[in-house]
Length: 127
Image (cartoon, rainbow, N blue to C red; front, side):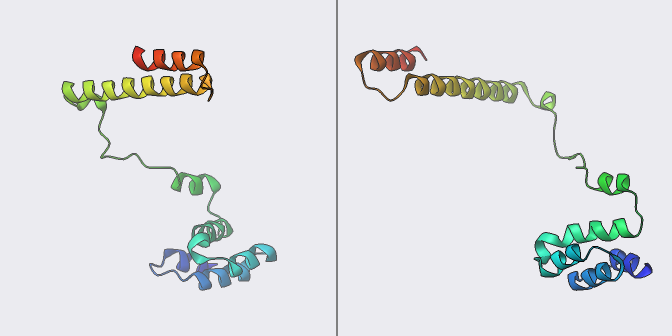
């Protein structure tokens, strides 16, 4: 299984070579056929995962590799100036108000009866 470790550690991993390594050591022929017939762009990460399982890397380590890392470029809202925080709050409130209005207008239905038209007009003018 050293050849699997070598393939995993190499910079230029060839998909076909990885599939042949999987076929050499794995018992599940349907899985191997799936990788053989599959698109390398879609199956490459899964192939790496299966090969790592074969050499005995614990699942906790494999899943820890896939957890998203915190983005250092994200900035806390508290670090923004007051003007920007107020603007963000205003946009949030306007978006919420528009969303509520759309829902209320949708609930009135598509009828053009005098009562429904009057209710629509009241909703629009109220805001």
